Image 1 (cartoon, rainbow, N blue to C red):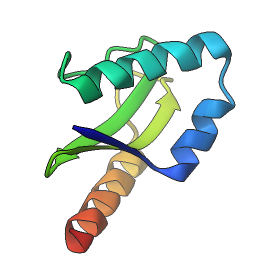
Image 2: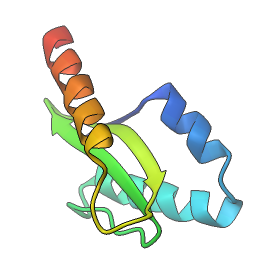
Image 3: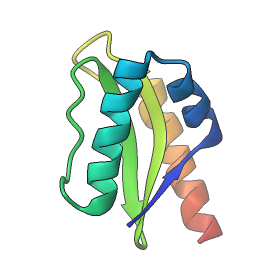
Length: 87
């Protein structure tokens, strides 16, 4: 699978510590290689979806509660619909 990361997400990741960035990058690489189906990063949530042989990483944020905020879910749905339209 091909890993597609939104530019703003790449910028966010580059601002994290090398240790955290390495952990997230390693997990994304495992996902891309098909070695894992989910991402388990304790202090971060990574929002992604699979579509036509690609994995789209559309949001990453530091967890502050057990639930993903509604605004992030709505944004992810909007991005998903836009990518579907462009496919």
